[in-house]
Length: 216
Image 1 (cartoon, one colour):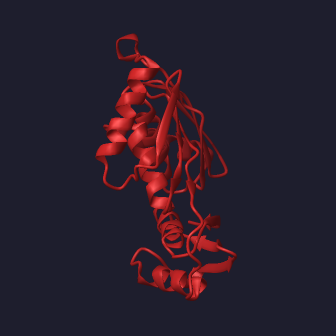
Image 2 (image 1 turned 90 degrees about the vertical axis):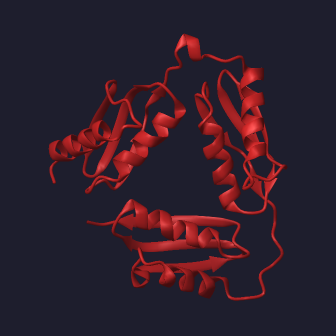
């Protein structure tokens, strides 16, 4: 696929996705790397635009340079915005009460300890959905878990093998002191995300080094 063809395919996917207002999004492509420039009306749209681009066949990485422009009628005082973010986090059963949020000029910074990576991701997802948020910095961190008595590498490989979306034979796993390193090739962004999620879910893992490459 040429750069022009890839640009057109990504632009078509952005137009097709009803969650994204693509009118002010410019797409460029270079050897599988897609760059998004322009502005969108919410942080959620910025995130959805990246996901839409990643779905397109031929995309190997996305440089999301989209800016978030909040309309005047949607602008919120930082204190009010922080209250809404904290309320949303509190109502989500997946987010522990240890997560706190600060807001400055619409940028939300999440802090505090959590037990699992999925809790970090859930907190960032919830915060990014609040109207008026222009960005999310996820400074939450994993508390050191109890050392896992089993074979971490083996448990990750078995999880990869169970996932119907993955060809586990093409993914190599190495573990050292709680760090899991993934290498090899996957066939899509969805497969890459599934592999990384499987590694994070293993007991005793505190860091995942994603070195997977996407091939078509």
